[in-house]
Length: 118
Image 1: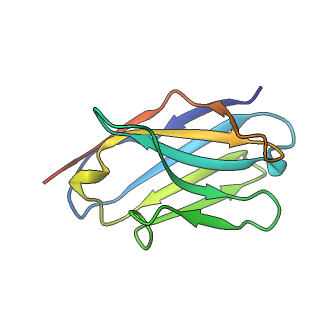
Image 2: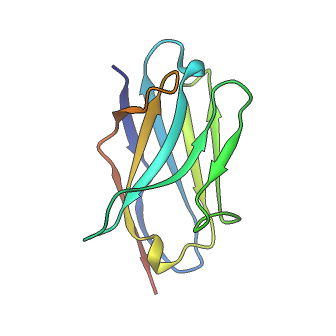
Image 3: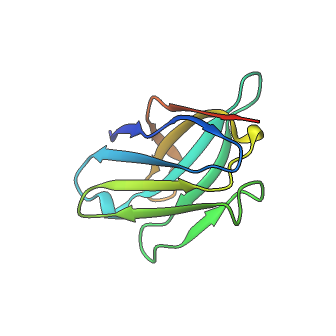
């Protein structure tokens, strides 16, 4: 089981930026696919971005493409979600997740709140 701890959430005005960090307590972090999800009040949890384990492939939901980037440091066991040009609709609790070998998102952090004011 991977233990994940997110940090970096907060309150920001529309158009601003935030940087979320997720630190994993696991050996061989480099073999995990890491992802970010979010859940807004009254809505289902949705996938935001992912970073593959082998080629550092990244992918993004259409709603954040061009505004968010994801990066990872396999020495520090961290994955970063850089969020730029934030919009009020980005307001949500953001969760870090880990997947191994295509087995689904099996490990989750507790989440960090992001609030974007208009």
